[in-house]
Length: 475
Ligand SMILES: [Fe+2]
Image (tube, rainbow, N blue to C red; front, top):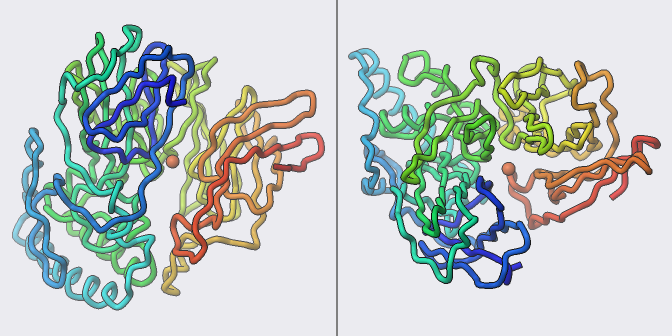
């Protein structure tokens, strides 16, 4: 692959999800040289992209990072200096009245003295929520980068490559005050713009409602879904957030998501997404910079969170997506949006309990929905445990639903035992055998992303065949 490739590298290679919008796409990221673009001189034939494997965790690194000033906090590690290099003003301080100021001070004190120094300090952080592990090495936080033009090019950028390569990833804008999982970081979009044989690079935080409020307050106040919401301290942090909301110190009514997990270009918009909120519309400016336009609800048609990996049908140009809820029924909904932006009614897919569904797949005629063994049981927090549970008694299954079904009565559930795919890469129909073939990364242990395990994580690219005639699967 490398011999027929373009290699591009920037200062931060922490890519999780990526996409490129350009003509005649042929791309491969594989260089570790900072801020350089290298064009190898063999003809480009294949369209491909590669993710960097992160190096082994190193010691934590917090600089140079665009953390904003946070007050020094008792019982904590020293806060990093303000290394803010943004060329845009940080949100102004909140205009709290005297009562709110007193409430804020009281709640900060409760957080510092009781939650941090009693509940959390008594339990050492597992690797899955230890910032020293989760955001170290290749995953260490990076600063925003205004557009850097005329990047060095080795060789020549082919004239037919014009466009923008964008990627999204998690990047905490403030040093975590407690547990932090890699997936908890604020969304940052990176853009490599290629135009007329020249390339520029920029990266910016997606300015979510959450990020702007935390910037204004000067400390992290929104709960981190994986890093903090664990056991009794997680309950305490939820109650603390509820108290701050009641006092008007934070406003969760316009979303709490981090927009850090996926990117899609649909209906003339670049959307940055995480599965806990609506998408955010991000604009690439003519100078190659990135601007957050705002939270996008498809003209008022979408009111619930959408998963971060919707699919756009390459033929019909429609977008297909899921929405899941970890608290109340319906736990799972499916919908599609026309190329013009018109959303279908939701199809409620019945599940017995809320389930982690990070990704799914589509074929020409079907949508394939995984219902696997990692489930949400919030009540486990009262037992001091993680709410993300690996239910080994549950048999994983895949639901096959006609794309334009009006309800879930036609869904065919096919058992796929001992399967946990976090991501899917492709799917297609084989009419002769009445099979649907799904390509996914099967992970073991299934919950090792979220819960500490002695067994190291294995992720295996797997072909899963769902036979609609027999109702059986094999892989
Ligand atoms: Fe993902």
